[in-house]
Image 1: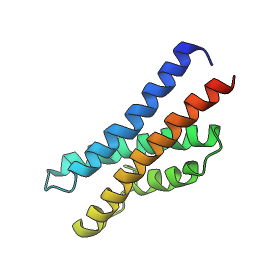
Image 2: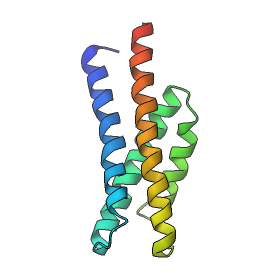
Image 3: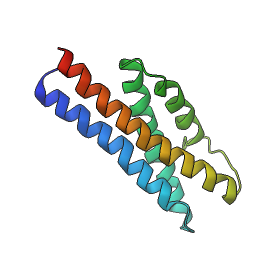
Image 4: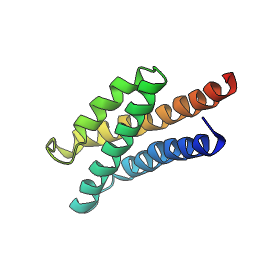
Amino acid sequence: MEPSEKKETLTLIHWAGILPAGMLYLAMAPLPYGYYTLLRLIVCGGSVIFSVFGWHYRRPIAYLSVLMAILFNPLIPVHLDKEAWAVIDFITATYHLSAWVILYGNVKAYEEEK
């Protein structure tokens, strides 16, 4: 991987981890319905990105990311009550931050081996 590709990969991993996590923590507050629709798009997209990179670096977060993408998919929404979503949002936000740290470290370590 060339330095520019590595930088793009790290930038994508940063956005896929930080943006959904921040939005998920914020989602525990009462917000308009449109926010939650946007949240589904962002979290599903971030989860897909993590599943692709997790698969590439052979990490089990790939499988968890697929489950998160299915749960937050905007095409066939899962309807739960507010309390259940608050718990799921907190767990998913924490997961996205953890996956971000794991994948960031994997990209750096993979590049140092080459």
